[in-house]
Length: 256
Image (tube, rainbow, N blue to C red; front, top):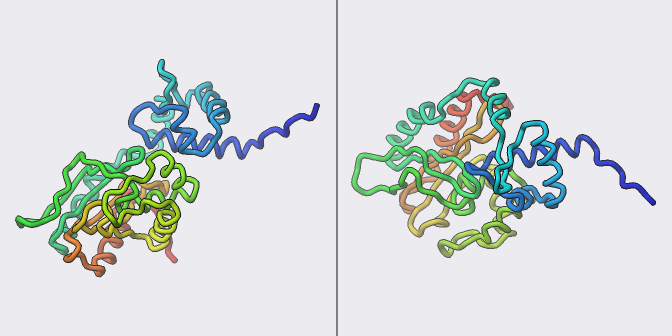
């Protein structure tokens, strides 16, 4: 009987890293089915690797069979870097952008397949776009979310589309997979993204990503404005602010 060729150790590590990264995007314990979809791994493969991670105390499994990062892994991560509050770093830059643009500046983080608004800076006038802290939006209808998807590559975008079915919010929403893949990749290439009334008619956004010392995305920075008032010249100021915040968070930028 022909024996199966053993899986290379590098491939196993890559797959374990994919699973850990997928688990980290959820604030609550997550099912095997969701992790399999997130990583495009067969459920049997994901199950086997997850239980090896459990044996090594990097992942925990609750009584309902759902997975989460272990306390040991979180402690190891905490020991490697100082706890920098990205909100406190970002707020002064957000206030400067608010004053420069006269529009609402948002700070968002990712949780699973949505972004959450965690901080905002609003202009001192009656008419402005209002984003409620704690509110959520699907990744594919926001500039920041499209950049986050783009960083996951084609497989990551396909997994997202499978899980969410790309609901349509306006006639401009990217609800077709091929168009969304092209858009997300273009956003990553440019280093910024537009939301052209994709979440709400009449509202346009520009978004950039914020990075930590390890090059991981920790948040998104964006400006929201009535579409007729949004200006392309804001891009350079938003990109510059995003880079400055990332540097304060320990990110080492390219000198090229």
